[in-house]
Length: 258
Picture 1: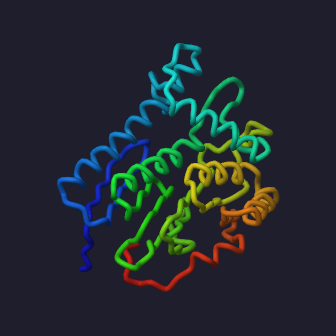
Picture 2: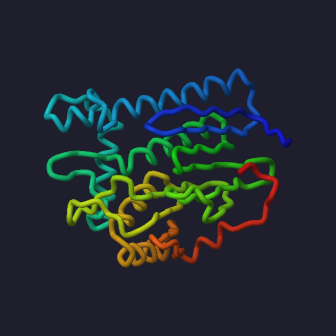
Picture 3: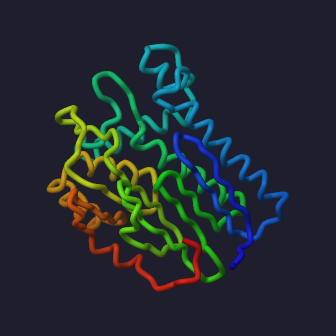
């Protein structure tokens, strides 16, 4: 069995299993606090932004109660408004007077965590939360991370990506509403978006799923042409459409951890 330096931990938080795998060769006395802080951050995000948490800031905001003007809350609401504008309103965190940033918050939280780990010296790591994945650095010396993009309905690996610095977000339709009709969108199987910011990728994946197949393909090609976000769209019958830049994340490494 191949062993790697570093440390890893898995916990259930934000409604899903989250794994943080650090491969940087740091002393255990540094790794343990890093992992403690990582999951403390994710629990804070859940408590602050959880739409179903009875005393979260989002719940209080929707009830018209006093909220704490914390910088992270202002940042998230601002970024959601930017994503709404960038997607022509297909990403929408404000509907019928209710604020729900759930289509962005997980990707944003993991992106912030990844930057914090890198700044703390853990430059080689992978974070996985229910299919939203952020990798940095190397899985092993000279080796890119190997990431399997799984179908959220079947669990089958549809594409294998190799990268040193990438965010990968997949939307599978659970609870995604078409903002034009107010009804759940069901015309696609899944949308996966990859790029440098996992929060943006998460928002784009949510928006494209809501768009349906025709508009989603058009938007995906526009983003790929402008750079730097690439997209894999899977139809309900399993057919795939990928933007040309996906080929740049292919590879033949076989020694990496999956």
